[in-house]
Image (tube, rainbow, N blue to C red):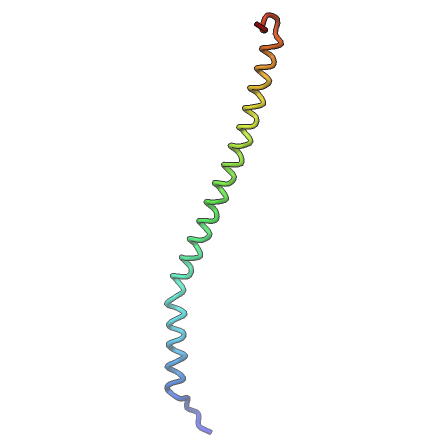
Length: 77
Protein backbone atom coordinates (compact mmCIF):
# COMPACT_ATOMS: atom_id res chain seq x y z
CA UNK A 1 0.00 0.00 0.00
CA UNK A 2 1.35 3.38 -0.93
CA UNK A 3 1.93 6.12 1.61
CA UNK A 4 1.01 8.90 -0.81
CA UNK A 5 -2.36 10.64 -1.03
CA UNK A 6 -3.95 11.55 -4.31
CA UNK A 7 -3.22 15.19 -5.11
CA UNK A 8 -6.88 15.80 -5.99
CA UNK A 9 -7.88 14.78 -2.46
CA UNK A 10 -5.35 17.09 -0.81
CA UNK A 11 -6.39 19.93 -3.12
CA UNK A 12 -10.07 19.41 -2.27
CA UNK A 13 -9.35 19.44 1.47
CA UNK A 14 -7.21 22.56 1.11
CA UNK A 15 -9.89 24.36 -0.89
CA UNK A 16 -12.54 23.41 1.68
CA UNK A 17 -10.38 24.80 4.49
CA UNK A 18 -9.74 28.01 2.55
CA UNK A 19 -13.49 28.39 1.91
CA UNK A 20 -14.35 27.98 5.60
CA UNK A 21 -11.64 30.38 6.74
CA UNK A 22 -12.62 32.95 4.11
CA UNK A 23 -16.31 32.88 5.08
CA UNK A 24 -15.72 33.19 8.84
CA UNK A 25 -15.42 37.02 9.01
CA UNK A 26 -18.59 37.55 6.98
CA UNK A 27 -20.53 35.09 9.11
CA UNK A 28 -19.31 36.64 12.35
CA UNK A 29 -20.28 40.13 11.16
CA UNK A 30 -23.71 38.87 10.09
CA UNK A 31 -24.21 37.37 13.54
CA UNK A 32 -23.08 40.62 15.14
CA UNK A 33 -25.58 42.61 13.06
CA UNK A 34 -28.41 40.24 13.99
CA UNK A 35 -27.58 40.48 17.69
CA UNK A 36 -27.39 44.28 17.49
CA UNK A 37 -30.74 44.48 15.70
CA UNK A 38 -32.33 42.21 18.31
CA UNK A 39 -30.88 44.28 21.17
CA UNK A 40 -32.12 47.50 19.60
CA UNK A 41 -35.61 46.07 19.14
CA UNK A 42 -35.71 44.94 22.78
CA UNK A 43 -34.62 48.41 23.90
CA UNK A 44 -37.34 50.01 21.79
CA UNK A 45 -39.91 47.59 23.15
CA UNK A 46 -38.88 48.37 26.73
CA UNK A 47 -39.09 52.11 26.11
CA UNK A 48 -42.56 51.75 24.59
CA UNK A 49 -43.68 49.71 27.58
CA UNK A 50 -42.32 52.34 29.98
CA UNK A 51 -43.97 55.14 28.03
CA UNK A 52 -47.31 53.32 28.11
CA UNK A 53 -47.04 52.82 31.86
CA UNK A 54 -46.23 56.48 32.39
CA UNK A 55 -49.20 57.44 30.22
CA UNK A 56 -51.50 55.35 32.41
CA UNK A 57 -50.11 57.01 35.53
CA UNK A 58 -50.59 60.44 33.95
CA UNK A 59 -54.20 59.64 33.08
CA UNK A 60 -54.89 58.41 36.62
CA UNK A 61 -53.38 61.56 38.13
CA UNK A 62 -55.39 63.78 35.79
CA UNK A 63 -58.62 61.96 36.65
CA UNK A 64 -57.88 62.19 40.37
CA UNK A 65 -57.07 65.90 40.11
CA UNK A 66 -60.32 66.57 38.22
CA UNK A 67 -62.26 64.63 40.85
CA UNK A 68 -60.64 66.62 43.65
CA UNK A 69 -61.41 69.91 41.89
CA UNK A 70 -65.06 68.94 41.41
CA UNK A 71 -65.40 67.78 45.03
CA UNK A 72 -63.83 70.94 46.45
CA UNK A 73 -66.20 73.45 48.04
CA UNK A 74 -67.37 75.85 45.39
CA UNK A 75 -65.92 73.72 42.61
CA UNK A 76 -69.27 72.79 41.10
CA UNK A 77 -70.90 75.32 38.79
